[in-house]
Image (cartoon, rainbow, N blue to C red):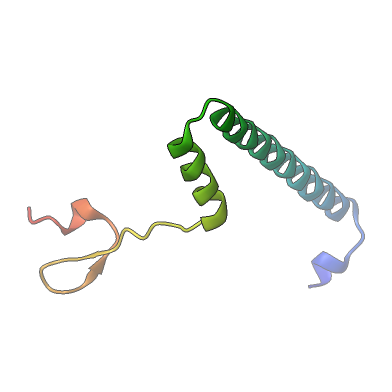
Length: 87
């Protein structure tokens, strides 16, 4: 806690790096969203209704991480499919 509250040069550099990385990823997200929106607009203009609806559904649904957990023969949860296969 004292290290974080210390106003030394290393802390200032850490804050600058954190600020720059957040700005970098914020700009990447803006660029990604602009390309997705332009894709949806072109799908609308070209009458690609299926692709348009899929894109809108993805925006509305949001981000959902996929879970890849399975059970092995003993009933234990395993996260890697290959490790659960018998040798």
